[in-house]
Image (cartoon, rainbow over the protein chains, first blue to last red):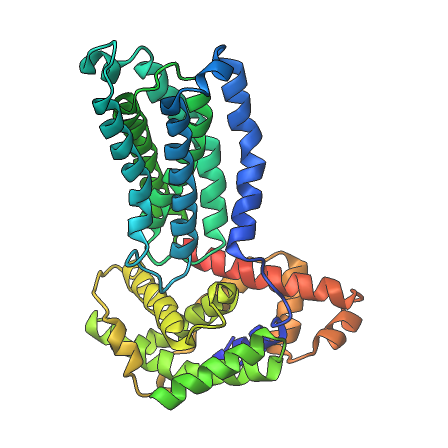
Length: 212
Length: 181
C-alpha cells in the first residue's frame, strides 16, 4: 500500500470519533472498582468505631490526603495522556497530599499526645496497610492503565507511575476506613510506602503497555 | 514555517468537525515533512534512508488513531511533532539503534516531496495479510481499489455502518500489529 492510498483510507475513516481519554479511564476505573471493593469487604471491612472516629480530625485527614492524591494523580495522568505534555506546570499538584500530611503532622505535634511518637508512627496495623493498599490498587491500576492506553502518552513509564498513584489513592481511601491508626505519622510512613510500591509497579507496567 | 503550522491547525479543526476533504489535505501536507524527518532520523542512526516510507506510514496511522488526544484549542504542530518523534524513535529502536532525535528538527524540517527514491513500504502491506478476512477485504477495497465506503458496502453485501466499523478496526489492528512486530 503506498502512502497516498493510506492517506485516502485514513480520510475515509475520518467520521470515526474516539471517546475522550478521561471518559474511557472513568469507565475502566468503574469497571475495576467492584474487585477492589470485594477485596475490601471480604478481607477488611469498615472499622467498628467508624461513626465515632469521624469526630476525630486526624481520622478525617486520612481521607483528605488519600482523595487529594487520587484526584491530583487523575488530573496529572490525563494531562500526560497527550503526546506533547510534560510534567512542567502539573507536577506540583502531586505535592498537595504531601502538604496535607505535613500540616497534619505539625498539628499533631502541637497537641499533647497519650502515646509516644514512635508508637504512633509504628502503629498497630502497618503490615496489613502495606499489603492491603497494593492489593486493592491492582485492579484499579489495570483500569487506569487501560484508560491511558486510549491516549498517547509520550513518556509511558511516567504516565504509568502516575496511574499507580491514581489507583493507590483510591485504594488507600478504602483502607483508611478500616485502618485503626489515625496518626498522620502513621499515614506519612506506611501509606506512603504502599503508594510508592504501587507507583513503581505502575511505572514498570506503563513502560510496557503504554507505548503507542 | 509559522504560516504552514497555522494552516495545519485550521485544517485539523475542520477535519475534527467532520470535513474529510480538509483531513485529506492535511495528511497530504504533513507527509513530505514527516518523510524528510524520517530520512534524517534514519541517516543519523546509520540506517538505509530508503526505509523512510514505512516510518511515514506508521506516523500517519498514529496521527489518525490518536487524533482525539489533540486539543482543538492548541496549535497542531507541537502535537504532530510529538507523535512523529515518538514513532520515529520507536521505529529506530526496533531497528536496533537508540538515538536522540531533537524535536526542533521537525519544526524546521523542509518538506521532502520525493517518495519515488524510497523503497516501497512493506510493513503495512505485510500486516494486511494477517487481518481477519472481512477487515482485509474492506481495507483492500478502499485503499487499493479506491472504492468508496458506499461501493464497498454494495460489493461485499454489507451495510455502510458495518464497512465503517470494519475499516476502523482494520486500521487499529494494523497499528497494533506493527507495534508488536
